Image 1 (spheres, rainbow, N blue to C red):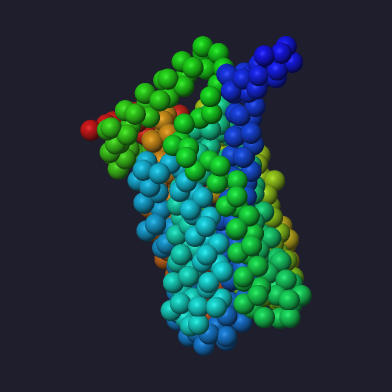
Image 2: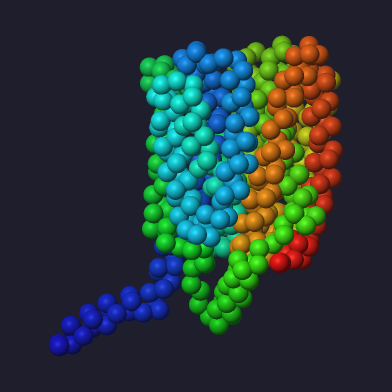
Length: 434
């Protein structure tokens, strides 16, 4: 073998030796970041795009008012029912593979539902998309904890910011896109399937991952990896009795009450402003302002939360903003509409705070998976009656006084359980193992 051939062989072997590990690790990390961001962008458009075109969908399918009302409760119901299955699926196939399948389910559901041919088919295809959203909701904190254990706050903030951006983008752009494509509501809903299909791609090279973090260099890193692996194996062999943890229950109730407030805001806030004399177009913009507030704050709040020993004060500040916003809606809904929209937008950032605390209240990846599934499934079950109850109170009272009083009343226990969930402790300490 000539010297040049030996040099070429040595260069080739260098890519197969540990010296090639940083390059492999870097690419895997970039793929994971891209997968997290693109997935987060697709966790709400299935819901908010439908809300923008609900009247057209009802007319097109001949949907009754009762069935249309049921649609508002289907998302949290699906999140609760299907989210429970996420940890078991992740243990069997790996979190990356399950999220990849979840993005594929969202794509298929959004592609099928406009052309399903009737109300039953529309609901079934919507459930398919929501199933993909449910498992991805639960596993995002797990993936962040395992791949970025030293950057939980920043990565959760990035994920939450992308989720808020996807939510507001679908709400704002669906109607203009529909008009640009000839006014057919089916085309306006189908376009979001293409966005979901893009989110499948980064996960494909990662589907064989079983949840372990990418390799690190140095003895301390290897020791930390070994400790994490032992913790993960112990947690898998002895599942936590999660219902015995007070922190888990506090976090679940906090998650449920913040979801209740968010769904009430998305579903009813424009009508509150319209009934106060605000033009319909302006009412829609006010809702967009509330939702867009989550984009920058969803990145900032998790970073701040991870630097504090106790996240409860953040929950209190967010709750105080919500109370101020509800007071404004009660006393002067039109006079200070922009301020109330901003305050409620800040209050709705309890969602990224809840996600951050899920990652901080458990030590191991399996523990985060159990806590995430429990908190989100229980929380979404808690959130189901809220929007319906607001509608009933509005219909029977003929005004918004009682519904707004209910919203403000729910904010008080949200602040209390948020403060409890923010204490510096883990569910492993409280629940123990079997």
